[in-house]
Length: 360
Image 1 (cartoon, rainbow, N blue to C red):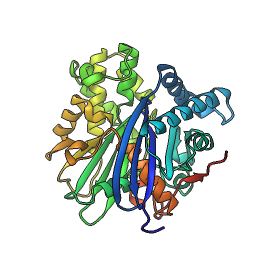
Image 2: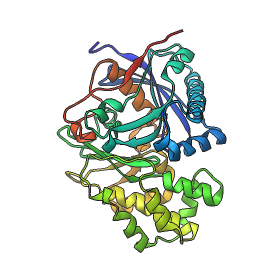
Image 3: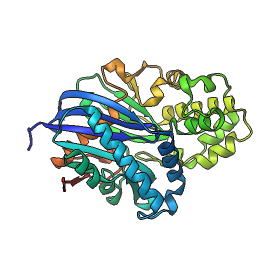
């Protein structure tokens, strides 16, 4: 199927735990020929709270745990509803599921979601389990978006830096000669979301208002940036809770506004500290973090080139990750690489994903 275009629906439930994004596109696995409808289904508060609880429980859980299986079924049904919201038929679904544990150094990555049930509900084959093959082969299993970013940025001037700020932050650096390098840089919105939930009763710091009202504690920020993760060479990846204990210790005595300001600076300075082969001509920012003025201003302060939301390049920042998994599903069907030595540290370009056919 080298040049055959395939219609795909992509689904993404990220580390921010806010809901499931869905997007339709058509691609041959190399070029994206058409973009279609996009939508977002917000999770009910109870599901979001249970997903957040799973992150804490995951290291001790087994796949047959009753609580986990209940949450997984509710999550899967929400994904099926999101597919219906797309309002367009497709040949395949790319189903990332919800990451509840990511520990590549232990050769473990765990995304929940019932692919067989989703295929039955949607009556469409499902590609899922995108990360396991890479982790089993010694890769980090993340980030997986870089090959999609390269397709999206095919005609843009390079070097180009693409930053995604979700629960975790990651970067894709695209070189003028086709080079692709990537890694998780550090925390994204996750710690800020947890802080807003704890102190404001809100799922996130809307418009960065809490962080904007505070002052960065430089000494505590230095403690956060001294975490051993930042001394590791790329490629490297994170679990959403990698920094939780350190963050709790470093911010415990701070007023909430100062804690938020310090966590925002932690995110942006960690991004800027990522080693790049050459300075980019431009920085494009995706993920929910692009809507936080404090994060965007913090990033701009770290770079001497324009820092812009991905919409400045004509991309749909709300749908980008869902579009990515639609694209990766087609690449999986065609046996094309999803990960590269420069993106996950795997020894050679590697495909991934597993196909779940419709079983009625």
